[in-house]
Length: 465
Image (cartoon, rainbow, N blue to C red; front, side):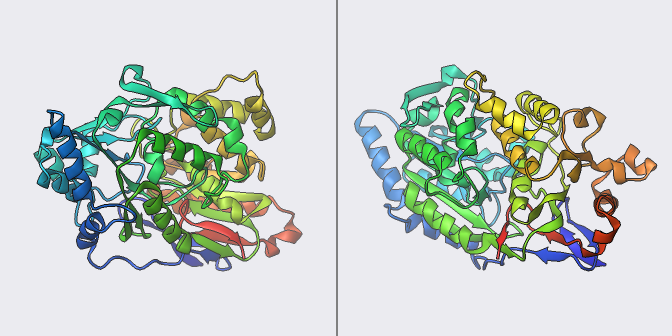
């Protein structure tokens, strides 16, 4: 048997796979030897931009001339992204200290969580994510609310027809700073940069075009691609219209260690980070596989986020093959996603991917927020049937599975373990799912079946070598 590491849970899991399994991984980027120094160096020597201190000073001087104190808005990601906002690699404290050195009072600095359509982060989650010093300084931290129309400002219409509703406190800030992680993204090509604004701090109505069915179905709306990608282009147009004074984006390795800090002008810094990610994220694979095993990684806190690994796996998965996914849907009370997401999943499960796509592309269809993520699942289920998707997350029970397409991974556990599933039982699931997948093929073909393990889950993007 072949022992592989699955990066889920506090210390990861070790799973045994058949000896003939081909194991694929991204190339390992070099980490930054002195991450704290690298963050501060990026702020003082940014890309295509004046240093953050100089920009902050100019904004403060302009506000003072107008008889008031300058206000700064720092946009941060929520906890679905492992952005280093605390510790030695933390990017938030150096930004705040730079602002305060230029005369910004703590009360005039806002940390705005780019929740997008996600649920609000709870106080204990914010404290787990953000450096304690931010709380000690008394800096306000607020979740963006996409449904609060009173706190949204309409700033225009995009060239593609998207209505630009943006968080009012961001628009009203003198100094606008975006932070985030750049990694491959299955719709926008890459995360980070402009996505902190759109979809991070836009209104629900602004998603109707940005995440509408035509954009999601566009062939250029895919991993690692910005050129001609309508999702990227719409997001960038929103961000430029709203205004961005400075960004601080990072890239990370498999262990969430810093591999790069990219600060400065919106497009220049983001494009440099995307180039860095492209250098190691793509994984050349030897053809397509009958059975692909993978995991949902850090991002897979709920089923909604797991769509990313479903789509990422397509580069290795043979038509009609089997996909085996382990996830830790640890988002308390929200292991699947929103009501809208669950509702559209039910429709997908009921009528199938082809009919679902036809329905949501109809001019008579009423757009439902978060239908886009279900539309991403159709990319997988147009490749394989529901019965060939084996999924295990210990948090899911019969109530959840009423909504979900695919095979409930608890099926492969013993009766006692099925009654109280745990992440540690992933070995039972994987072994049972592979056995079931193999047995679904004619006996004469079984010895020739090819199995692959994608060790990076949603982060690595396999492609045919």
